[in-house]
Image (cartoon, rainbow, N blue to C red):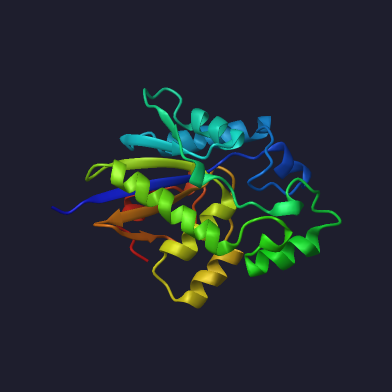
Length: 215
């Protein structure tokens, strides 16, 4: 029997570190800004008619707070999955972009922070795949699943799951915009994942066109 699950991937809301220009990866965290709460409310409204069967979330506080806002009013448990945490940027995590921008860019283009105590892109893509396979296994055919996590992790998902050439995957993962509160779609049919390469802002969200897209 065929099994298809659709994952609605939401990036967390804007944080104080996002606002203040601080590098924020997997080993640091900061609170959501007041200004991002209406954005997350629009995300919630965009997903209002989606019958969510499960909600999975990064263990980091910014993602947890965002998930709570997005599913407010629903009687549904938020499950934490460690493999959904953000890319670990090593020694650069928590440093201001000012004075560290070039060093960050050099590592980011290579998608490898392992030489400064962080993760490599290969490590992040591997755990992203493990996370989605775990969520897929736990779901039933036809389920819609909400995933609340991070921007750099989503870029790794693009590299891992999009159906384009290797060169296009790399370009997309490095250049795509991932707005706070944006919604992306990852689907899995009989164990094979696909995704759209660009996320949408909540106000642009159209679930039917996203669910049928296979590029």
